[in-house]
Image (cartoon, rainbow, N blue to C red; front, side, top):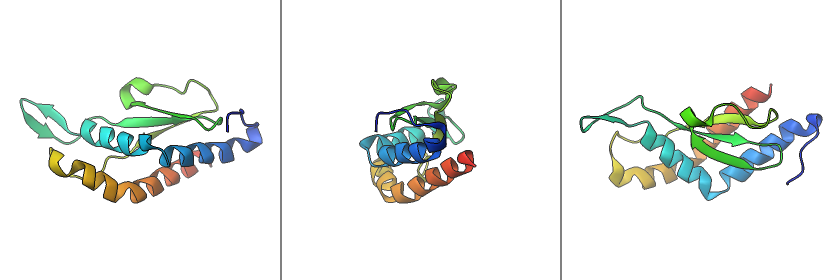
Length: 121
């Protein structure tokens, strides 16, 4: 879907953009990046409460993932930005990171769907 949606079609188009993102490899990569960003490190010690990654969804069905601190405002006013949730993994537990991300993708996808629904109200 590469045609800009009419305003009345915007919610459906953004929902489709989210589904396109969730079905792409970028979703798992974004969750992994958001999880790693949440592990702020200082002096070799990891602490929670670091950064995150976000996805910008456009009514034309496209998306882009960027560090939340860098993504800023949507390029297009009809786009929406959602913070990508981090997987629930012990801080610094890189050995299990990919497995834990994979196991949590369905729940994290539902969380993003709920976040989008809240923004579209």
